[in-house]
Amino acid sequence: MDKFSEKDIVNYVDGEMDSAERNTFEAQLLHNQELQKEVALYRNIKATLQSHVADNRADAQFKNHLASLNKQYFNKQEHASAKMRSLPWNKLWYVAAILVVGLLVWAPWNKNLYQQYSNTQMVSFAERGANDRSELQKATDAFNSGDFKKAKEILMPLLNNDQQNDVLRYYLGISQVETNEVKIGRINLSKVALGYSLLKYDATFYVALSYLKEKNESACKEWLHKIPSSASNYNKAQELLKKLN
Image 1 (tube, rainbow, N blue to C red):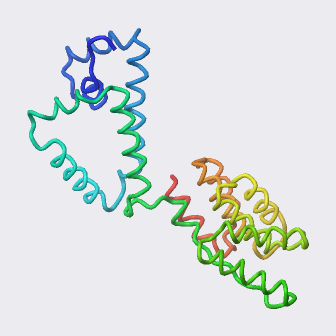
Image 2 (cartoon, rainbow, N blue to C red):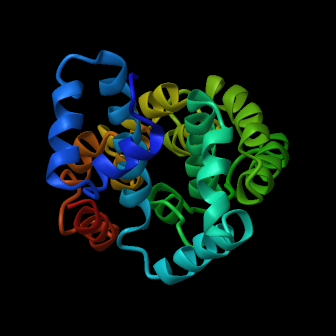
Image 3 (tube, rainbow, N blue to C red):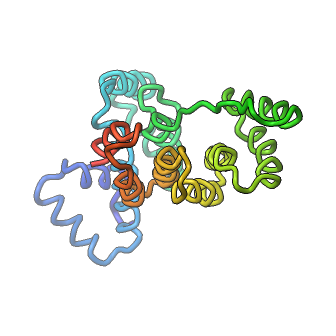
């Protein structure tokens, strides 16, 4: 990237260059594709981090954590630039990307919206036969303990034997979404949502959540708007809509 370092890129994106430095940098940026890519990469990493922590109530805790890392690894200012230079450019961003992802996954103060709204419990069916009750209880126990893979494995054959059972389809759909079979789970949930079951609007909400899990906020909002004010989960849907706006 000619004469520019990773520090120059960080300073440029963060607006910490003076006008002369910025003019020189931008003149090079116009025709240097590698430099353009690295600037875009840093902007993406920065934007991703900011979008997850900007409005967080525990932002101070996050900042304190970063400050402690700064003291640990860059305690002496004279060594900071040397440590920076010791990392190859591609290695630096590899580490940065891992840190961003790791913080977002680990941070207990930054639980994402899907996780906040996807908590539900499965109920049993007392009116079904003895064998089914046994299998359903196993599915219920697995589902309610968070073992969605096991719940899915039990629910699938039960639904195959009772294709019109929207309750089975609803919990199977959730289990599939939770085990990252999002599109298949959404098909099952949509069938319930578009039908006349008592779970119609619960399934509608979970279709919305399935899109949220894929970070498709537009589709998520579209499905949330399908929930009428008469539905028991209307207020929850409206609350989530406000957080997405």
